[in-house]
Length: 362
Image 1 (cartoon, helix red, strand yellow):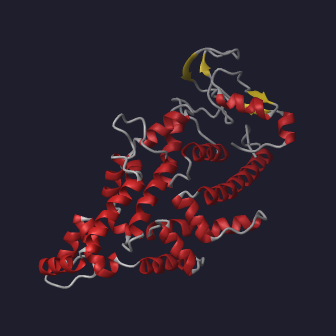
Image 2 (image 1 turned 120 degrees about the vertical axis):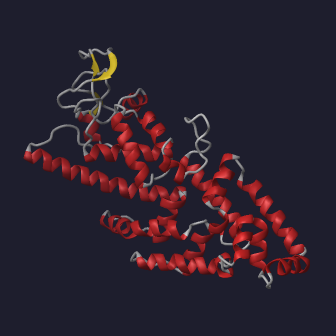
Image 3 (image 1 turned 90 degrees about the horizontal axis):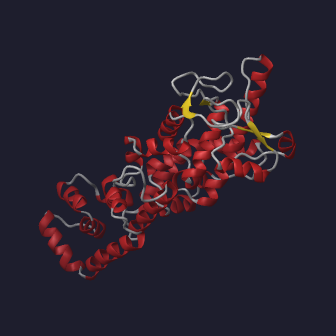
C-alpha cells in the first residue's frame, strides 16, 4: 500500500467504492484507511453502482459517470498513476514482481471487470502466458493454485539447487515439462533431492560397471557427468546417445557462471566471480540473468538519485528473478519511489494544463 504523510491524512485520503457517494469518502488516520481498504474501498476512482444516490445500495452494474474515468461498457480508463498503484498492490498480492506479459493481462482484466482485483488475478492465472511462466501451478478447478507465485519461484529454485549440488547444469534437467510434473505432483524440494541423491549414489558406487555399460551402449567413453545426467533424465540419455548435447553443456557450473558474467557485461553492469557462483547456486539461468541484468543499470541509477545505498546487480537479479525476500523488497521500494515521483510529476503537469483532474497519489 502507498505511504501517506501526516499532512495528507490531515486533509483526508480519498477512497472510492461503487456504493459510496459520488465524490468518494475520506480516511483521516491509518486505522480508518486500512479498515476501508479491507472493506473493498479503492484508492483509485471507480464507477458508481446503478441507482446509487450517494447513500449506498443499487445493483452492481457500472454506468458511465463524469469524473470516474468510466467510458462505457463497464471499462475504466486508468491513468498511469492508477496503473502503478494497481501493479504495486498486485506485487503485494502475488508476492513477486509480475513479468510484463502477466502485468498487461492483469491490468486489462482489472479494467474489464470494474476494478475487481480478485477477478483480474483469476483471468491472469487462467491465461496461456501464465501456464508458460508458472507451468503446473493452476489447479484443475481453474480457480486455485498450488503455490503462490513467490512460493513457486522459490520451489523451482530449490529443485535447481539439488541438481547444481551434484555438478550438473540444472537448466538441462529442470525443463518446463519437468518443472510442470514436479509442481503438479507437489513434490517437495527435499523429496526431489532424495531422489537425485539416490540415483547419484547408485551411480557413484558402481562407476566402473556403469561406465562399462554406457561405453558399450554409446560406443565411446563417457564422462562421469554424462553418465550421471543420463541416469537422471531419459531425455538427456537420448540426447547424449544422438550426440546432440555436448559434455560441456552438461557440466560444470563454471561455464554457466561465465555466461552469467557475460550477460552482466552486455547489460552494462559488472559482477564478481563469487557473485556469478552465488547466482548459479541460487538456480539463476542465463535467460533469467539476462532479464534481471537488463533492469539493473536503471534500478541502480534510480537508487543513486534517491540517495539510497547502492544495490548490486546480482542482488537485483536475485530479487526480480528468484524472489529472494530481502533483495525483492529493496527493488520494490526503489521502483515504488520512481512510480510515486512520476505520478507526482504527471499530476502537477496535468493540474497546470487543466486537462485532467482527479486523484493523483504520491
